[in-house]
Image (cartoon, rainbow, N blue to C red; front, side, top):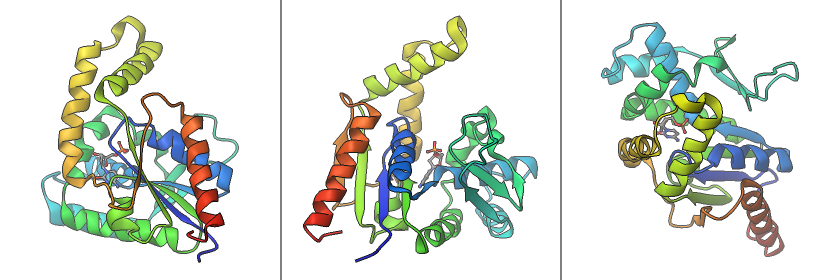
Length: 232
Ligand code: DC
């Protein structure tokens, strides 16, 4: 039995993985690792170095050449971030969610050599400490021996409603319509589908009717039950 658990949370975009993963990690005192940040980081650096996004070899060489460090945010960081990403010591966190990165990250993450390199880095983070690792392929490929695997789902309608609500709160009348937001989610799912897997031993949680904190409580309950039953 491991002293520090590995908890994998997988699922498509917009199902609340990050919020739930971060809160769960905080409750357990574990490191929260958002693996999407690795692909976003490489995308950011590829864009700034003009590395062609269709060149798997060049992107992989770039991935191998940079040192990516993900740390809890410093207390003085006031931009609402849940982690800080340093590339060769430089903070690039604010750039990870730029529209240009959003647009290019699916392509960058589609290259197998890139995935193999970044997965290795992700595994290393889980070697020495308890982690809640969030992504698409964590329970199946990155941490197949994880102590608990959760796969989160939310219906397209609910995800579109939530995302649209966030955009309206942020941009008001300039927000795209609900139908546009829904279409974007469908397209994004299609792009990421090849890398999104449900582990056969995952607990699937649909959160259409659950708040993030209710999902966190449910996961904590599963952990407690498994520990009582000697399974974790
Ligand atoms: O979760 P996110 O939106 O930050 O993910 C960014 C991109 O990285 C998205 O296109 C899916 C991809 N990704 C992946 O292929 N495998 C992961 N484990 C995490 C993210």
